[in-house]
Length: 220
Figure 1 (cartoon, rainbow, N blue to C red):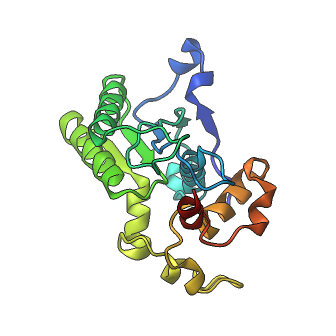
Figure 2: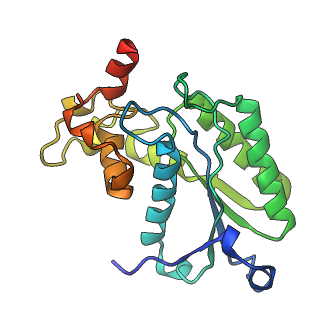
C-alpha cells in the first residue's frame, strides 16, 4: 500500500502559508465526537481520538487521482449529544451540534473550500441525525461537498446497525459472541485506543471484563 498523504494541521498554518492553498483542490477534515466517559480505563476523548484515527486511515485508501490533494485537519469539535451521563462527560443538545457543523461549513464554503469531511466515532443515533442533515444542508445551500464519513462507513459495514459481530467476528481469537453489545468502551474501543494511543489507556484494562462500561455503570 502506498504511503499516506501528509496532513496539514490547520492551527499550525501561518497566514502566508494559508494563502497559498488551492482551496478547490483541498479537503478539510474535522472530527465531531464527545468528551465522554468510557469506563474506568479509557480517556474521556476516546471518541474524538477514534474519529481522528478513522480520518487518518481514510487517507491510506484514496484512489491515486486524489492523493495529490491538500489535506487540512481542523482541531476536533466536542459539541456532541447523548454522552454517558456521568461526571467527565460534556453534554450538548442536538440543535447545538447541528448549528456548529452548519456554521463551520458555511465559514469554509465562504473561504472557497469545496470538500469537507466530518469524522466521528460516537454511536448515538441523535448524534448521527445532527451531523448528517447539517452536512446535507451546507452542501445544498453552498454548493460544496460536505459528508459524514463515519455514517458512510457504518452503512457499508453493517447496514447502519450497531452490532459488529458480522464485521469483526472473523478476526483470530475473537468470536461473534464477544462482540454482542460491545458498542461502548469495551473490547472494540479498548483495542482501538491501544492501537492509537496506548499510553493513554489505564494498564488495569487487562483485569477488566469485556462488558466494562455496562458493569461499571451498574456498580457506580
